[in-house]
Length: 376
Image 1 (tube, rainbow, N blue to C red):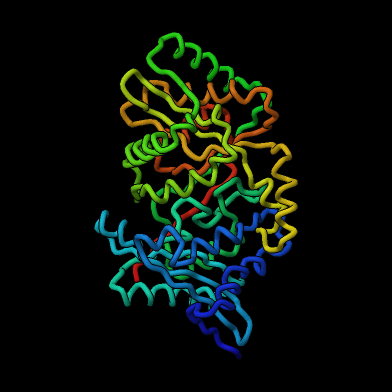
Image 2 (cartoon, rainbow, N blue to C red):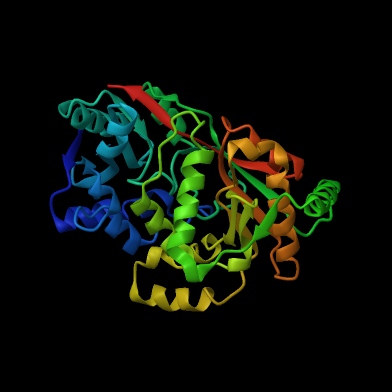
C-alpha cells in the first residue's frame, strides 16, 4: 500500500500543480466557480502577495506515489497575532481527495509548520485572505456561490471534523432576496424608508470615485468600528482593503455603493456590486489565452444578480433605522437595471443585526460556511 507523503512546494512545476489541483477535485461540479489563476498566483507569491507584507506562509502538496492528492497552506499573520495577542497558524488552500489519511497528513504538515514557529492553534480555512472564499460549506448546494464566497465538496466537513477541529465563532451566512417580487416585507421597508427620509436625520449618497482615497479611509473606519464587537474580530489592514476594493473599482456602479450620513459623520456603508461569479464560472479561471476572449465577451453581458458584501452601521446607530434606509435606497436605485435577485454575504451568526435585517426583508438563508479551530 502506497503511503501519503506531504512535501513543501519548492519548484515552479510544483507551484503550478498546487495552483491547478482544484480542477482535479471539482471537475464536473456545476456549482464550482474556478478561482482566477492570475490573482491566485499573485496571492501566493512572497514577492507580490499582500499577505507577505505582514506574515509568512508555506505551501504543501500531498503525494500518493507520483500522484498529487491534496494541497494545504500554513501561514502566520504576525500583524494580527501581535495585535490580538494570539498564536494562530492559519491554514488555507485545503483541497483533498475523499480520503481521511490524506486529509490528516495535510493537517499534520500544517500543524508541524506552526508548532515549529511556536504557534498553538490551527485556524481556517483562509486563503492568505480573510474575505475571499473562506470557510467550509456546511449547507447550500442548490446554486453557485456569489462573488468572494467559496464552494467545497460535502465530504470536506467530516474530513475536517474527524481531525478534531471544531467550529469557531458563529457560522457565516449568505442570504438571497428576490428583487422582482413586491413582497409585504419590501413594502414595509419602503414605508419605513420614506418615514426616515422625512425625519431628515439620515441621508444616503452614492460613492465619490473621484475621491477614492478618502472613500477608502471612510470604509476602513466603518469596517473596524462596526465589526469590532464580533467574536474573532480581525482588524482590517489598509493594504488589504485597498487591494480588495481596487478589484471592484472598474465594475462598480457608484449609484449602488451607498453611504449613510448624519450632519456630523458617515455612519453606514452598503455596497451593491454585480455578481461577477456569473461571468467567472464561464472562463475557467483564465487558464488559457482564449479564456480572456471569453471574459471580454461575457463581461459585457448583463448579470442577473447583485452581491452586497457588507451591511455596516456603527453600533451607536443600530436603532436609528440606518440599515433599513440603505436597503430601501438600494431597492429604489436598482429599479429598471435588470437585476433579478440580490445576495447578502457573508454575515456572521454572531452579528445579530444583519441576519435580523435580512429576515425582515424576506430574504432566505441559502448558504452556510464554517471556520474551524484546533489546538496543536
